Length: 158
Length: 205
Image 1 (cartoon, each protein chain N blue to C red):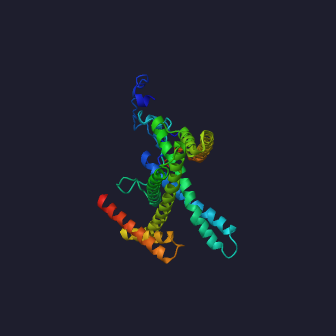
Image 2 (image 1 turned 90 degrees about the vertical axis):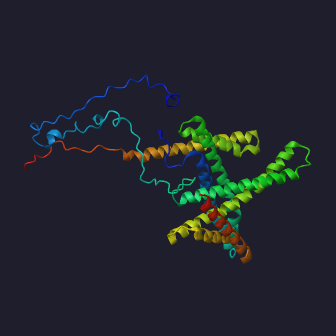
Image 3 (image 1 turned 30 degrees about the vertical axis):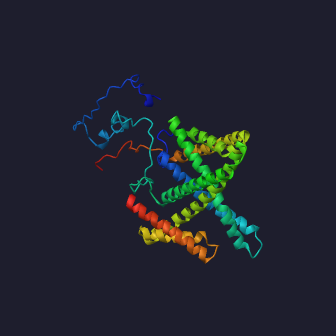
């Protein structure tokens, strides 16, 4: 399928920095929205703005950090797997997800590491499957067509 | 694997190039449709090397702008600026904080008997200091890049004053709940950092 690879992404070692930043930004912005609403709803009336603000200040950077570490580790492993396998296919992401999930759960012991790795690989497999399905679905209506020639043109002398 | 290791090309015989002539006899051409046949416009007869009748992979290049600056980073638009800037600052904050935590953990657990306990203590210190510094620095960098890109967009100019102003705003916003004095200090620090970064960028790149 994707023999030529993904051309919208930067080349490999440098893209790790991009992914760190992108996932961190995603986490911070998402965490701001999530904990803003949560802090607002869980505060007593009269302190709702302050509650939302303090919840955002405490929790949004942490969520951003967790997202960023996940995305950066994943990107690092993805590049490493690409370098070793020298192919670009969905298994890269699945293998990278396996290693990411494993290394994030490393401090919990052997069992946690194994479970985290398998869970993360399964999640990435679902992501890749959905991505391929979306790609097929988007490409369905965009096949190049040959120009239609008239079967029997009108004679020139009209 | 043949593309990597070589070989394999000898097994596939090259087809002899077929000469395709479009002998046009004006006496036979009575009207347009006599020579404008679909056979004459068959893409597979254009050039045998082009392989136009086989499976082609089309690249959509219309939404891909080439990189504008010639530095190390392939920055194309403001989202690249945001991602690379935030990523670099976050990662360096994580590294510096982690190194500080490592030193602190090693110092605090110096008289520990068990190696396992010591490893745990050091790891705890690293994961307390590293993410704290990384998260704070990353948030400042994120807000700084957002503000900087906005100022660029509204002013229509890209210079160092934008960066210093963006640093002042993001620093003030970072300490917005600690009172005006802390805001002023943090604002000054971040804008000085932004100015130093601009000077370094101008002199190095």
